Each structure stands twice: as structure tokens, then as C-alpha cells.
Amino acid sequence: MQHTTRQTVRKEQLLSAYADQETKAADFTSSPNPLLKKARSPEKPFPKLSEVDTMRHFHRLAKSNYSWDDGLYPLGSCTMKYNPLINERIAGDEALKHAHPALPPRYTQSVLRMIFETEEILRTLLDLPGVTIQPAAGAHGELIGVMMMRKYFLSRNEKRTTIIIPESAHGTNPASAAMAGYKTVKVGARENGLTNLDELKKLLSTDVAALMITNPNTLGIFETEIPAIKKMLDEVGALLYIDGANLNALVGKISFTAMGADLTQLNLHKTFSTPHGGGGPGQGALGCSSRMLPFLPLEQVRRSADGKANTFEFYNPEKSIGLIKAWYGQFGNIVRGWTYMKSWGNEAYKIAETAVLNANYMRAQLKDILTLASDSPSMHECVFSQDSLQKAGLTTANLAKGLLDYGFYAPTIYFPLNVNGAMMVEPTETESKAEMDTFIMAIREIVANAPKHTHGAQQTFVTHIDETAAARTPRLNWNS
Image (cartoon, rainbow, N blue to C red; front, side, top):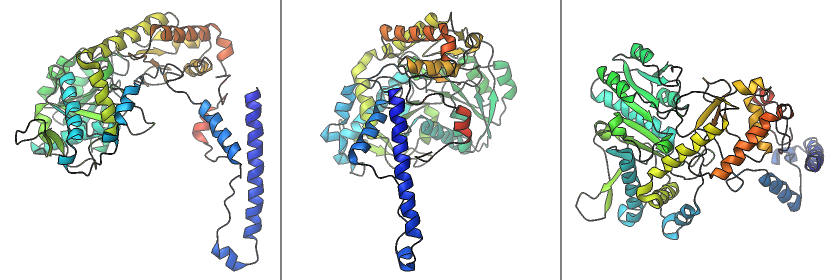
């Protein structure tokens, strides 16, 4: 209550300062001197605060933030894992952080080598002949992949208009397809959470360019029928795009070539532990089959054609879609991802093994009080519906806000849309059993004390939010 009272007092002081400034502005605009009016615009009605008050205000806000220093980030689908400090140390090296992308390649051989090695490691982990880390983020990689599809079919004098996307796919897939000029068609899922092959078969034709399927899908389930899907696509000449946003479950464990993938995008800021930048800078990657190699964007990195050992150069793919970015990736994040990959070495497969183990531990410990979205085995995350919560008088939002009171960041909620009140929990390989047990205990206590948590978070900086009003009538001014 003391904290809330202090915030109330500070708001009243800010509003008072604002009112004083409004009065000054009104006096200024009513001045009889027309030259004065023309020379200057009215003074903006911002409150005047001392440096001490300003610093204390922002310090209080900073203490309300949540970070890895505080605890678990259980965001499903987002793959929020710890960013090791060694990544930051190497990315901050004086020899790397000041390297300018406009320098000629002969002066940036160390940079080109790190880019090449990062792509080479990804080629090995994905088991695909081509990889580029030029995309700015995962969704940017999707767009590049779809643009490559279009160029591929144009090179064959085929004009295909449609991309099929399962309802369990990653949420950005339809937008990426639409931005590249395709119309999208949804294919449903069966009760077990896997793509409905009977429905898919009816949708396939020579007008279909590709199926964009997420594997593991957004229910955290591995699509086990990929070989059958690939065969169906081959019959109509369509491509197989496998969204790799959930690669954390598969690192070093599966061959994308064996699955028949033509394209797959992934994220260094998810699977390979570079920071999530709150909208940027992320860092994407795009893998491709041999038939898609000629269509990669300008420019790509390879070993020098003159045969000199450990020298690298840019080259232009034969039928490239063109330039998609001013410079090659976000180099600071490439360095961080490179460091993470080098740290794991030939044991990178343990990332997937531990992440899957942790997700299934969460699933096993919570399935008696939360309703599983699917009975199929979980991969990187476990997904629950709010069915059992509703019986206890709670919603998914109530549970998420209750977790804020216990000092945890809330899981991803209300996605995927085909699950009633979905809640996605992804502990990744980062979390210890002790931390997961504390999180599990918090959920159990919230459910056991349901009436206490029906109105939202009680101890957070802002409480009792009206989500509907916030969405329909947002207040965007500092003094609202």
C-alpha cells in the first residue's frame, strides 16, 4: 500500500506541474504582441521536475522490470533462455565491435570467417546444403524464403498463387506469405494435434506453391507424418517449407534433408541464445535444399575461389532474389550466437535433450491440475487449456497474473488460438529442477486458492487492469 500511495502522490504532483505549464502556455498565446506569437510556438506543457525527482521516477520503474536476474521466463514459443555473459564479453571485444560493414573484405577477414563458421555449424546441425544468416530475424527469414519460392517457380515458367498453412503453424507464416504476394489457405489439425492429412490432400493442386508447416508445431508436438506430407507435395510439384522457430527441441537431433525440407528459417535470438531485443535487433537464419541455393539473396559468404587457405569473399548466387538488407546480418548478435555454438561444440544435441526433458517434467507435474491441450508427447514446450481452471472459477489470465504475484514472468497465454484459453510453458534447457519446482508450486497454490486470484495480480506495479478498455481506448499520453 505504501508503494501505491507514493505513486498516487507523485501523479498528483506531476498533474499539478502540468497544470502550471498549461497556464503559462495560455498566457503566452494570449499575448497582444503578434510578432512574439509568430516568432515562437507556445512552450510545451511538460512538467518541470528536478533531476532528483526524475532519476527516482525512472529508478522505481526500472525496479518494476523483470529480467533473467529475477527468475524463469516460461514464455512458450518464444524460447526465452539465459544469455551467457561470455557471449557479451566476446561481442564487446575491441577488434570486433568497431568493424564497419563498408570496409573492403580484405580488412574484415575475421568478420567474414565468423559469419562463414556460423553458417557452416548451422548447415551441420540442420543437415542442409545451404544456410544464410543474412535475415534480420526469423520472420524476415520467412519472407526471404517465400520470395525464393516465387523466384524458383518463375524460373520454371510456373505461376502458383497459394500457400497452405496449418492452423498449428507459427503465427507469422500467413503474413510472410501474403507479403510475398501469395494467398493463404488454412489446413486444420486432428484431435491429436497433428496436421489433418485428409484435409490437406483435398487442398493440394498444381496451383499450390508450398506447405508452410511448423515442426514441432505450436502445440509443442512433433509432426511425425512429414514423409507422407512430403510425398503428397511432390505429386503436385509443391515445396515443403518447415518453420524452424521451435528448433530448440531438435538441435543436432534430426536431419532436415531427410524430412525433405526445401526451406527452413530459425532464430539465433531463440535457439542460440542471443538477446531478444524487444522488436530488434534479432538475428535470423535461413536453410535451404540444393535446388533452392541459386535463389539465395545477395551477397553470400564463401571461401575464396582462388584457393587461399582461410580467406573468405562475397559472391552472388546465380538466380538471386536480390538485395534484401543493406549489410550482412546483425554482426553483434552473430558473434554472440557463434560464441554459444562454439561453447557447446559437438555436444549441441544436449540443448534439445535437456529442453525436451524440462518441458516434459513440467507437463508431468502439472497435468493433474491443468488440462493438456493434446495427449501427444511434448517436445520443447507443454501447452494447456483453461478447461480445468474454469471449473475452479479461474481463467488463464487469472493464473498468469497470479504468477506475477509469486515473482514469475507469466507464460505465453491465449495462443495458439485453436486451444481454449491456451497457456504455453517452455522452460528451455536453461532452468534447473529447483527453479521449475518453485514455479510448479506457485501454480498449485494459485489453483488451490482460486477465489483470491479471480481479480488479477495484487502485488504488481499496476493492478486490476481492464484489458478490454486498454485495447479499445488506449491512453497514450503521459498524464492520462
